[in-house]
Image 1 (spheres, rainbow, N blue to C red):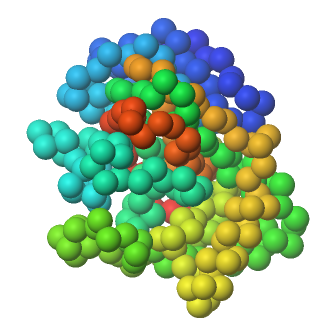
Image 2: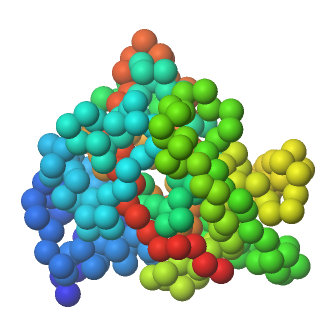
Length: 269
Ligand SMILES: [Fe+2]
């Protein structure tokens, strides 16, 4: 199998891959190595890419089949499996820690972001290693989390969700709060604070509990912060991480990322 040129970005999470041109077809050996690298490092960075929408979609297939995103007003009209992450269109940066699209039976294995327009300062994306977060919890709390599930729907308070998207994508789907990675075999804490409510808990109590977990679990040493350059592709393993956007950039400047999510397995403990 071919070797990847891989440089870890922090001791806990993230690796930069060099020598791979995502605009070209990727053979099976490279695809398998990339899947393994993602499962191990949880965030992969490819620099200096120049991709058309079809090339980007073809590269995403290395990680799984692209799946439709639930804000249809932000999809690229000719390539609706690519979502546009930008604020000009009324989107707010997703600044709270989360994992994507938990309101699906088979939520994404990975989220890919491609830097198309990058502000001169700020606007980074941070990714937290929720496998390390799980391992750092006290034994009793790990055991308790393994008994819990969340009930996942679209965010109730997002006024920008169109009725047709709500009709298609509102779930509900039950997911375990500890998810076993299908390739790596390790466990990670898995939930979306505003899409998932802990089964059997009132929404406010659930929100408070999940916020407290995030506060205690996500420490700087398990986080990789990606400072964007135009042409970067960042791949995030959604099965064992949470991520957030940083809104600390000048809103007169443009920040445009192309997002693809690829389908994963049905989460299991
Ligand atoms: Fe996200």
